[in-house]
Length: 51
Image (cartoon, rainbow, N blue to C red; front, side, top):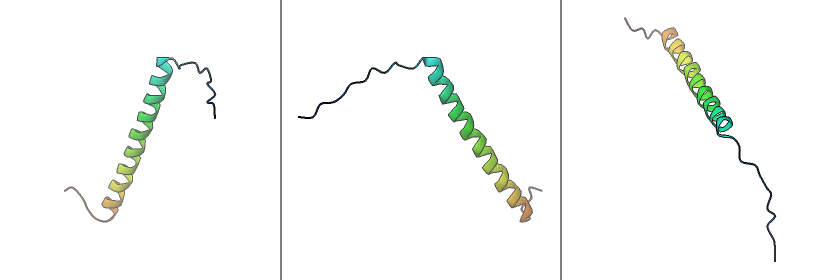
């Protein structure tokens, strides 16, 4: 029969987890802003203006 090895893993502290969450969130917001800006520039170059 196979046995499963159990490793003692320390739980990460909550502020470290929160830091990773914020880092991932900020990265996704920044990448969305870059994509939106590129699309806006392409639309402006194609002659689509707001006025």
